[in-house]
Figure (spheres, rainbow, N blue to C red):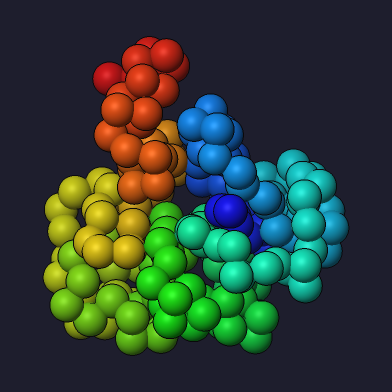
Length: 179
């Protein structure tokens, strides 16, 4: 199971493009409402989440995803349940994926020390001890980080590659006419 966490102020493309890629791969993914069942994106689009954060079952998780969006990241980072879920993912060696401003949550927790990582340029300063990459999407061990909205599809495909293999990711890439 993949869980993608939504909090008010999330960046819509950074959340929904990975959901689309992961579902195309036939991998089960649930959107998780952190600030309510209906979550409002940074551009005002309302999304009804599949489940509540209180219903997350980390015993079946293989990946968690934190989308960006300034206010969304603030709302994710201040939520003690999200902090606990991240800790559980690290303890259980589960993929932890974050895009745009969201890698700052991991950096602020000290999780990216010596990990090749990236983030939206103004959030790089929060990646304490990370090996900063000039790539737009980076995988290092169980961490996948990405720079921003413009690479949301690539970010989703990188997650698919990690979970289902390069052949599956390449097939989806061809199907959607992505370079």
